[in-house]
Length: 219
Image (tube, rainbow, N blue to C red; front, top):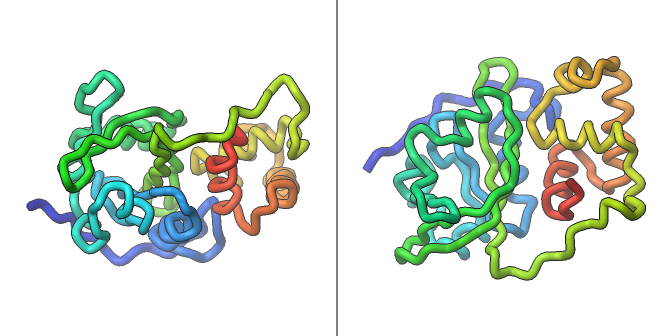
């Protein structure tokens, strides 16, 4: 059985929190959601696993953390083609800094049962050493979901177009400087949009705002 090992994490300014490590940021997100969720590092190894994921798929955290994701969960797409592979397409997209849309796939539980889920992916990068984690938030497709927001009607949170753009960039793991360059505005203006966004969503941090965006299906 292949097991991945980690070097000591590098402390850096992440796009979500000041002064926390990459793996601490991932753990915060895993521990703050009631949805099944897990983290995968840049090598494709599972680096975090929360209680709801254990309940859904049966794997205890002690048995799954450190193992290659594709060997354990063996994900397949909706046409039952292998999706989880050593050359994970999600990892390739993250390295290319391409957006990852939510999608459906089947994961294999510990008892061999195929579980179909809707998967939301958040990129948490470490801008100093180029590493990153991919956070996978899972919703069983048989679980009732709230209706999609009516984009033709008024936004209940009254987010501006700029705030929605900032939120999309946060989900993609962009730093303040990168958002400023993408939006062609100053870093201070980006921070102002972020603060307004946090206030409207009711989040205490950028990480919490990303989680709320996924859980409330704001985007």
